[in-house]
Image 1: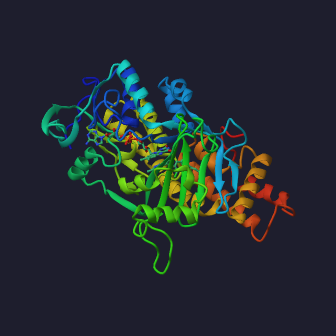
Image 2: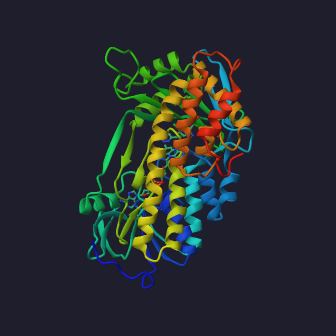
Image 3: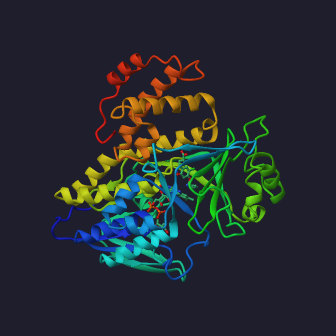
Length: 464
Ligand code: FAD
Ligand code: 8RB
């Protein structure tokens, strides 16, 4: 590891990646007086069409909104966001049922357009004084000498820069992480899920409006696999189908190995997603032209190299998508890192404090995201599960400061994810035990439950 330069002498930071975390962090740090340079592999999204031009949307929740608020961008982003009140569960028979996420419209999530959001963040970063260098892909780093090599992928030309400090916001495939791991190990491991995903589109209807209920996150739960759809403000929906890569031995379940051609995907939709089929005119083309996306969880033992380099967002802790928290967590990281840099006397101390604070929380949301796949694909139409949800609501009403539903703690609050996980596990134990063998809440012993809740769940600050 290189020597630690004294903090006051250097106020220059080099960020790698101008995606969601990099551009937000550039705003926060520029405002604090740092000279920030951001190097981004891709071209400027304001000039050329952004990526494939398809609209990809993300669910924004309270943690992400809070970070946008800190950057002064909440209003701009929320103006284009589409409210999602709950899960719209689509049964095999075409029935639909809305399961609310919260108690009322103050507890909802918001669908935002990734490209628009990234552009809003980039513009604010430049206004705050940051310089964004496009077409600069990090290739290699000499941490001791303080040199990095970047490549312009248009002509393969190298560009070498000097740096004091590198901050890695270059996403799940982070090149900076690769260089840090090459130098120092870090115990990197990725656990791939045996499932992948494919994106499809529902266009606007003939009248230019949404073809299905816009104010919901749609789920077609099918046991070992599922489809979801999120609304876009231009009246389309982005549909994501999650399927196993291979069927379990002896099973006739669909998988990416068995569903390959246009006719095969049509047959799958006719059988399992019949109400969605007529809404997706480009089904076969979308299927054949886009490869399935991989899903996995990335674990690292360390996130920083002294005061020389630090990772955040997907570069540090990529997760599976099933809690819709990847961006929300990455944004929360940005605020935590900027705060640690305010508080600590050196960057080495700030990076260490950031890592100590956030690594347990990242591990917690990674675990909860894996669990939520089972809930979404298999449990949302299960009577035992629905009874547990009903009891969860009833206990929240009786003990609003102690018994806070799992989804609420993750999505509508900013308590550490690790605290949410710990309390959720206690609560689940109570819910499972109290509903075992029951078909409804009649006959529940509320007195005993109240004693258990008071004994096992201390008052949660900010709840109620
Ligand atoms: P990114 O946003 O991926 O940014 C990384 C940036 O670094 C990119 O601009 C990339 O071009 C650049 N880069 C990469 N390599 C280099 C290099 N070598 N040199 C220079 N630049 C480089 N999260 C949610 O909270 N809610 C959701 O609903 C949700 N939906 C999602 C849907 C999809 C289809 C996907 C793929 C993800 C979704 N996520 C969601 C997760 C979310 O997108 C990520 O967690 C979030 O973008 C992480 O931010 P980041 O800045 O760490 O990485
Ligand atoms: N990455 C989401 C939730 C939780 C919904 C619930 C789930 C697609 C890739 Cl799968 C998923 C959620 O519990 O009812 N909130 O937000 C977003 C989700 O998927 C996004 C669109 C996604 N993320 C690679 C694909």
